[in-house]
Image (cartoon, rainbow, N blue to C red; front, side, top):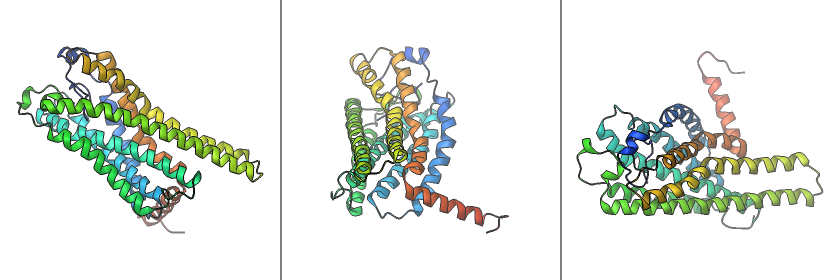
Length: 324
Protein backbone atom coordinates (compact mmCIF):
# COMPACT_ATOMS: atom_id res chain seq x y z
CA UNK A 1 0.00 0.00 0.00
CA UNK A 2 1.64 3.23 -1.09
CA UNK A 3 0.34 6.73 -1.61
CA UNK A 4 -0.05 9.09 -4.48
CA UNK A 5 1.63 12.43 -4.98
CA UNK A 6 5.35 12.63 -5.49
CA UNK A 7 6.01 15.42 -2.97
CA UNK A 8 5.11 13.03 -0.14
CA UNK A 9 7.72 10.71 1.33
CA UNK A 10 5.07 7.99 1.54
CA UNK A 11 2.32 8.75 -1.00
CA UNK A 12 -1.36 7.43 -0.84
CA UNK A 13 -4.46 6.16 -2.64
CA UNK A 14 -5.06 8.12 -5.82
CA UNK A 15 -3.65 10.84 -8.02
CA UNK A 16 -4.00 14.46 -7.09
CA UNK A 17 -3.86 17.31 -9.56
CA UNK A 18 -0.63 18.91 -10.69
CA UNK A 19 -1.56 21.90 -8.54
CA UNK A 20 -0.63 19.81 -5.50
CA UNK A 21 2.94 19.70 -6.71
CA UNK A 22 3.01 23.52 -6.68
CA UNK A 23 1.03 24.04 -3.45
CA UNK A 24 2.34 21.25 -1.25
CA UNK A 25 5.64 19.59 -0.49
CA UNK A 26 6.15 17.22 2.42
CA UNK A 27 7.78 19.15 5.30
CA UNK A 28 8.61 15.93 7.15
CA UNK A 29 11.01 14.47 4.56
CA UNK A 30 14.13 15.72 6.34
CA UNK A 31 12.90 14.29 9.64
CA UNK A 32 12.99 10.77 8.19
CA UNK A 33 16.70 11.17 7.47
CA UNK A 34 17.24 12.35 11.05
CA UNK A 35 15.18 9.44 12.38
CA UNK A 36 17.04 6.79 10.38
CA UNK A 37 20.40 6.60 12.24
CA UNK A 38 18.65 6.61 15.63
CA UNK A 39 16.21 3.89 14.54
CA UNK A 40 18.99 1.86 12.92
CA UNK A 41 21.10 1.93 16.08
CA UNK A 42 18.23 0.99 18.41
CA UNK A 43 16.82 -1.74 16.19
CA UNK A 44 20.24 -3.17 15.35
CA UNK A 45 20.94 -3.53 19.07
CA UNK A 46 17.48 -5.07 19.56
CA UNK A 47 18.15 -7.52 16.72
CA UNK A 48 21.58 -8.33 18.20
CA UNK A 49 19.93 -9.19 21.52
CA UNK A 50 17.12 -11.13 19.82
CA UNK A 51 19.63 -13.37 18.00
CA UNK A 52 21.05 -14.39 21.38
CA UNK A 53 17.63 -15.01 22.96
CA UNK A 54 16.34 -18.57 22.85
CA UNK A 55 12.75 -18.95 21.64
CA UNK A 56 11.60 -20.74 24.77
CA UNK A 57 8.31 -18.86 25.18
CA UNK A 58 5.57 -17.61 22.89
CA UNK A 59 6.31 -14.05 24.03
CA UNK A 60 9.92 -14.29 22.80
CA UNK A 61 8.73 -15.68 19.46
CA UNK A 62 6.41 -12.72 18.90
CA UNK A 63 9.02 -10.29 20.21
CA UNK A 64 11.63 -11.53 17.74
CA UNK A 65 9.20 -11.16 14.85
CA UNK A 66 8.26 -7.66 16.01
CA UNK A 67 11.94 -6.71 16.06
CA UNK A 68 12.30 -8.12 12.54
CA UNK A 69 9.37 -6.07 11.24
CA UNK A 70 10.71 -2.88 12.86
CA UNK A 71 14.15 -3.52 11.37
CA UNK A 72 12.66 -3.86 7.88
CA UNK A 73 10.76 -0.60 8.42
CA UNK A 74 14.01 1.07 9.43
CA UNK A 75 15.89 -0.17 6.38
CA UNK A 76 13.17 1.13 4.05
CA UNK A 77 13.37 4.70 5.37
CA UNK A 78 16.42 5.96 3.44
CA UNK A 79 15.39 4.24 0.20
CA UNK A 80 11.98 5.88 0.25
CA UNK A 81 13.20 9.27 1.44
CA UNK A 82 16.08 9.50 -1.06
CA UNK A 83 13.70 8.75 -3.92
CA UNK A 84 11.78 11.92 -3.00
CA UNK A 85 14.75 14.24 -3.36
CA UNK A 86 14.42 16.67 -6.31
CA UNK A 87 17.69 15.43 -7.82
CA UNK A 88 16.82 11.73 -7.44
CA UNK A 89 16.79 9.70 -10.69
CA UNK A 90 13.26 8.98 -11.95
CA UNK A 91 13.91 5.24 -12.09
CA UNK A 92 14.70 5.32 -8.35
CA UNK A 93 11.36 7.01 -7.67
CA UNK A 94 9.54 4.40 -9.76
CA UNK A 95 11.41 1.60 -7.98
CA UNK A 96 10.37 3.13 -4.67
CA UNK A 97 6.72 3.20 -5.80
CA UNK A 98 6.79 -0.42 -6.88
CA UNK A 99 8.84 -1.96 -4.07
CA UNK A 100 10.21 0.16 -1.22
CA UNK A 101 6.91 1.77 -0.21
CA UNK A 102 5.07 -1.52 -0.58
CA UNK A 103 7.52 -3.32 1.69
CA UNK A 104 7.41 -0.41 4.15
CA UNK A 105 3.64 -0.55 4.55
CA UNK A 106 3.58 -4.35 4.74
CA UNK A 107 6.18 -4.32 7.53
CA UNK A 108 4.26 -1.43 9.15
CA UNK A 109 1.12 -3.55 9.59
CA UNK A 110 3.14 -6.65 10.42
CA UNK A 111 4.62 -4.71 13.35
CA UNK A 112 1.14 -3.64 14.49
CA UNK A 113 -0.05 -7.25 14.29
CA UNK A 114 2.76 -8.56 16.50
CA UNK A 115 2.07 -5.82 19.05
CA UNK A 116 -1.49 -7.16 19.13
CA UNK A 117 -0.29 -10.77 19.46
CA UNK A 118 2.02 -9.82 22.33
CA UNK A 119 -1.00 -8.28 24.07
CA UNK A 120 -3.00 -11.48 23.55
CA UNK A 121 -0.07 -13.57 24.77
CA UNK A 122 0.20 -11.57 27.98
CA UNK A 123 -3.58 -11.77 28.43
CA UNK A 124 -3.54 -15.56 27.98
CA UNK A 125 -0.73 -16.09 30.48
CA UNK A 126 -1.94 -13.69 33.17
CA UNK A 127 -5.74 -13.62 32.89
CA UNK A 128 -6.38 -17.13 31.51
CA UNK A 129 -3.26 -19.14 32.50
CA UNK A 130 -4.90 -22.46 31.62
CA UNK A 131 -5.45 -21.37 28.03
CA UNK A 132 -3.49 -23.30 25.39
CA UNK A 133 -3.10 -20.17 23.27
CA UNK A 134 -0.23 -18.83 25.36
CA UNK A 135 1.60 -22.10 25.94
CA UNK A 136 2.80 -23.56 22.64
CA UNK A 137 5.99 -22.22 21.10
CA UNK A 138 5.30 -24.27 17.99
CA UNK A 139 1.83 -22.74 17.62
CA UNK A 140 3.19 -19.22 18.08
CA UNK A 141 5.83 -19.90 15.41
CA UNK A 142 3.14 -21.06 13.00
CA UNK A 143 1.03 -17.98 13.79
CA UNK A 144 4.02 -15.70 13.26
CA UNK A 145 4.79 -17.29 9.90
CA UNK A 146 1.12 -16.94 8.91
CA UNK A 147 1.16 -13.23 9.80
CA UNK A 148 4.08 -12.57 7.46
CA UNK A 149 2.51 -14.67 4.73
CA UNK A 150 -0.96 -13.12 4.93
CA UNK A 151 0.09 -9.46 5.18
CA UNK A 152 2.78 -9.61 2.53
CA UNK A 153 0.64 -11.95 0.43
CA UNK A 154 -2.45 -9.72 0.49
CA UNK A 155 -0.69 -6.35 0.38
CA UNK A 156 2.83 -6.52 -1.05
CA UNK A 157 2.54 -9.15 -3.78
CA UNK A 158 -0.71 -7.90 -5.40
CA UNK A 159 0.48 -4.29 -5.25
CA UNK A 160 3.83 -5.13 -6.84
CA UNK A 161 2.17 -7.32 -9.47
CA UNK A 162 -0.42 -4.64 -10.35
CA UNK A 163 2.19 -1.85 -10.53
CA UNK A 164 3.35 -2.90 -13.98
CA UNK A 165 1.77 -0.28 -16.20
CA UNK A 166 3.92 0.45 -19.23
CA UNK A 167 4.81 4.13 -18.97
CA UNK A 168 7.74 6.42 -19.63
CA UNK A 169 9.59 6.72 -16.32
CA UNK A 170 10.61 10.32 -17.03
CA UNK A 171 6.95 11.35 -17.24
CA UNK A 172 5.77 9.70 -14.01
CA UNK A 173 4.74 12.22 -11.34
CA UNK A 174 2.76 9.85 -9.10
CA UNK A 175 3.02 6.28 -7.85
CA UNK A 176 -0.52 5.69 -9.09
CA UNK A 177 0.72 6.19 -12.66
CA UNK A 178 2.64 2.91 -12.33
CA UNK A 179 -0.57 0.98 -11.62
CA UNK A 180 -2.95 -0.69 -14.03
CA UNK A 181 -6.66 0.15 -13.43
CA UNK A 182 -7.16 -2.98 -11.33
CA UNK A 183 -4.21 -1.89 -9.21
CA UNK A 184 -5.83 1.46 -8.40
CA UNK A 185 -9.06 -0.26 -7.36
CA UNK A 186 -7.17 -2.79 -5.25
CA UNK A 187 -5.15 -0.03 -3.64
CA UNK A 188 -8.32 1.74 -2.47
CA UNK A 189 -9.65 -1.55 -1.13
CA UNK A 190 -6.50 -2.53 0.77
CA UNK A 191 -6.08 0.96 2.25
CA UNK A 192 -9.55 0.92 3.81
CA UNK A 193 -9.21 -2.73 4.85
CA UNK A 194 -5.94 -2.15 6.69
CA UNK A 195 -7.41 0.88 8.43
CA UNK A 196 -10.31 -1.20 9.75
CA UNK A 197 -7.80 -3.92 10.66
CA UNK A 198 -5.82 -1.46 12.79
CA UNK A 199 -8.87 -0.41 14.80
CA UNK A 200 -9.77 -4.05 15.38
CA UNK A 201 -6.29 -4.70 16.81
CA UNK A 202 -6.60 -1.51 18.87
CA UNK A 203 -9.74 -2.84 20.57
CA UNK A 204 -7.93 -6.11 21.30
CA UNK A 205 -4.93 -4.28 22.78
CA UNK A 206 -7.08 -2.08 25.04
CA UNK A 207 -9.20 -4.98 26.33
CA UNK A 208 -6.15 -7.16 26.95
CA UNK A 209 -4.18 -4.61 28.93
CA UNK A 210 -7.17 -3.44 30.97
CA UNK A 211 -7.92 -7.05 31.92
CA UNK A 212 -4.24 -7.68 32.72
CA UNK A 213 -4.09 -4.62 34.94
CA UNK A 214 -7.28 -5.60 36.80
CA UNK A 215 -6.13 -9.20 37.23
CA UNK A 216 -2.77 -8.25 38.73
CA UNK A 217 -4.31 -5.69 41.08
CA UNK A 218 -6.93 -8.27 42.20
CA UNK A 219 -4.15 -10.75 42.95
CA UNK A 220 -2.53 -8.15 45.21
CA UNK A 221 -5.81 -7.70 47.06
CA UNK A 222 -6.45 -11.44 47.45
CA UNK A 223 -2.97 -11.99 48.86
CA UNK A 224 -3.61 -9.25 51.41
CA UNK A 225 -0.71 -7.24 50.07
CA UNK A 226 -0.85 -3.49 50.32
CA UNK A 227 1.88 -3.03 47.71
CA UNK A 228 0.89 0.39 46.40
CA UNK A 229 4.20 0.73 44.54
CA UNK A 230 3.59 -2.58 42.75
CA UNK A 231 0.12 -1.47 41.72
CA UNK A 232 1.46 1.83 40.47
CA UNK A 233 4.13 0.04 38.40
CA UNK A 234 1.48 -2.18 36.78
CA UNK A 235 -0.69 0.81 35.95
CA UNK A 236 2.34 2.72 34.63
CA UNK A 237 3.35 -0.13 32.33
CA UNK A 238 -0.16 -0.50 30.95
CA UNK A 239 -0.40 3.26 30.53
CA UNK A 240 2.95 3.41 28.70
CA UNK A 241 2.05 0.61 26.29
CA UNK A 242 -1.30 2.18 25.41
CA UNK A 243 0.15 5.68 25.08
CA UNK A 244 2.97 4.49 22.80
CA UNK A 245 0.58 2.38 20.70
CA UNK A 246 -2.17 4.96 20.25
CA UNK A 247 0.15 7.96 20.33
CA UNK A 248 2.13 6.49 17.45
CA UNK A 249 -0.49 4.79 15.27
CA UNK A 250 -3.78 6.40 16.29
CA UNK A 251 -3.45 9.87 14.69
CA UNK A 252 -2.41 8.44 11.32
CA UNK A 253 -5.38 6.08 11.15
CA UNK A 254 -7.83 8.75 12.30
CA UNK A 255 -6.54 11.20 9.70
CA UNK A 256 -6.38 8.53 7.04
CA UNK A 257 -10.16 8.02 7.03
CA UNK A 258 -11.19 11.50 5.76
CA UNK A 259 -8.06 11.69 3.60
CA UNK A 260 -8.92 8.43 1.86
CA UNK A 261 -12.51 9.50 1.21
CA UNK A 262 -11.26 12.83 -0.15
CA UNK A 263 -9.22 10.91 -2.69
CA UNK A 264 -11.89 8.36 -3.54
CA UNK A 265 -14.73 10.87 -3.96
CA UNK A 266 -12.84 13.74 -5.59
CA UNK A 267 -9.63 12.32 -6.95
CA UNK A 268 -8.90 15.22 -9.31
CA UNK A 269 -8.84 17.85 -6.56
CA UNK A 270 -5.96 18.79 -4.32
CA UNK A 271 -6.65 18.37 -0.60
CA UNK A 272 -3.24 19.56 0.47
CA UNK A 273 -4.38 20.39 4.02
CA UNK A 274 -5.56 16.83 4.69
CA UNK A 275 -2.41 15.54 2.99
CA UNK A 276 -0.31 17.61 5.39
CA UNK A 277 -2.22 16.08 8.32
CA UNK A 278 -1.80 12.60 6.87
CA UNK A 279 1.96 13.06 6.37
CA UNK A 280 2.29 14.26 9.95
CA UNK A 281 0.33 11.22 11.17
CA UNK A 282 2.53 8.87 9.16
CA UNK A 283 5.71 10.48 10.45
CA UNK A 284 4.38 10.12 14.01
CA UNK A 285 3.50 6.46 13.38
CA UNK A 286 6.96 5.78 11.96
CA UNK A 287 8.52 7.07 15.18
CA UNK A 288 7.27 3.85 16.78
CA UNK A 289 10.36 2.07 15.44
CA UNK A 290 12.41 4.19 17.86
CA UNK A 291 10.04 3.64 20.80
CA UNK A 292 9.62 -0.14 20.56
CA UNK A 293 13.25 -0.99 21.52
CA UNK A 294 12.86 1.13 24.65
CA UNK A 295 9.68 -0.75 25.57
CA UNK A 296 11.51 -4.09 25.18
CA UNK A 297 13.90 -3.08 27.96
CA UNK A 298 11.11 -1.76 30.16
CA UNK A 299 8.63 -4.61 29.72
CA UNK A 300 10.66 -7.76 29.01
CA UNK A 301 12.88 -9.07 31.77
CA UNK A 302 14.59 -11.63 29.50
CA UNK A 303 15.43 -8.96 26.95
CA UNK A 304 16.80 -6.60 29.60
CA UNK A 305 18.93 -9.30 31.21
CA UNK A 306 20.34 -10.50 27.89
CA UNK A 307 21.10 -6.92 26.81
CA UNK A 308 22.96 -6.30 30.07
CA UNK A 309 24.86 -9.59 29.73
CA UNK A 310 25.89 -8.94 26.13
CA UNK A 311 26.92 -5.38 26.89
CA UNK A 312 29.15 -6.52 29.76
CA UNK A 313 30.68 -9.21 27.57
CA UNK A 314 31.25 -6.67 24.77
CA UNK A 315 33.01 -4.20 27.08
CA UNK A 316 35.31 -6.96 28.37
CA UNK A 317 36.52 -8.01 24.92
CA UNK A 318 37.09 -4.52 23.51
CA UNK A 319 40.75 -3.73 22.81
CA UNK A 320 42.33 -1.78 25.64
CA UNK A 321 39.92 -3.09 28.29
CA UNK A 322 40.63 -5.60 31.00
CA UNK A 323 38.33 -8.07 32.65
CA UNK A 324 37.70 -7.74 36.31
